[in-house]
Length: 232
Image (cartoon, rainbow, N blue to C red; front, side):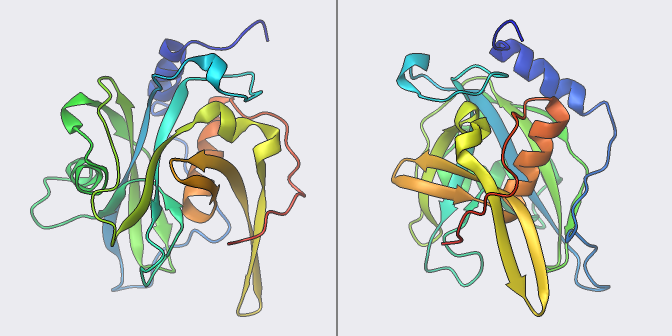
């Protein structure tokens, strides 16, 4: 590779990804049992950091160091998925026009995001999650006019941060988590990344989406998929 791809090139690749029509895959991503399916949406928002690239020590080759994705860490007091890193998002409410409207609304409520500066690229195929009974639509977007973001409700979120994609791709920050429940074992991709308030482990649903996206976009660097990262 002669050099890192520009952020304009990254945005173009995100747009082209939607034209493939490929389905998502995952060992434990299964359809909810009949009668339990509820629509939900998450905002997968890429943008460009305002920090100088030299401020970041990341060795990924495929992307510019200032390309980022918006993430949040859920409050540790929540009953489900406490403390986990996630994309902004949630259930589709009756007042939402569609899944895109739901993802933007949830992101605004959770992070203070000014959605006027968000350019929606499109929606990715639905991810069915049996454990929570949701059918989740990832809404892919580009942050054309970044705005300040942060924790809006401490009862819901502990941290809101813009994660440099180069840090996520850095092989030193990649591994797998192993979850054993009910006699079953689930191994999934995981990432270590610095948030506004410290180091975070990105795994589970969010890790699957990021890992799949990076693979499909051709951004993934060779990494050790036998390296186990301990769950919090």
